[in-house]
Image 1 (spheres, rainbow, N blue to C red):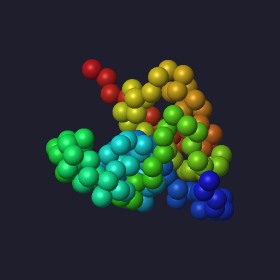
Image 2: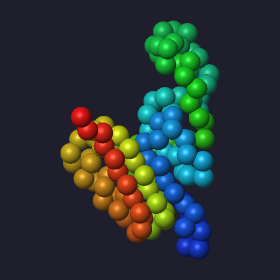
Image 3: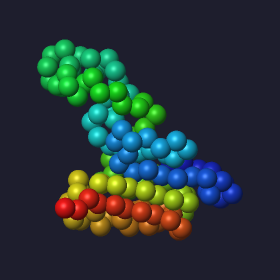
Image 4: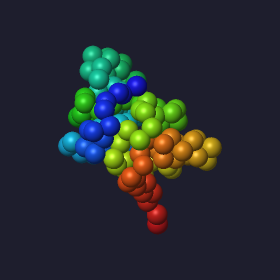
Length: 121
């Protein structure tokens, strides 16, 4: 659990499901296999070598500074920890009940600004 004083909350912003879209100055969080494997380059090379992980995906450079978290689980932050939370194209990866729990967790982590965008056709 991240613990800091309330005075610095105004500068804390969370980017959920960031993928490869890293935003400077924000905590960028993703739970994808690509984000996880970026932190384990030797495992990634081994999976590529044995053709378990496609070379086309293994060669994509992912930022190793991404915070890894499964968004189907509660967020690892205190209530009102962030001044802003942003998520784009994330809800479509969750089942309805998971999305309900996710939005409740997002609401508890910030009291000011949050934005969840989902693409439409």
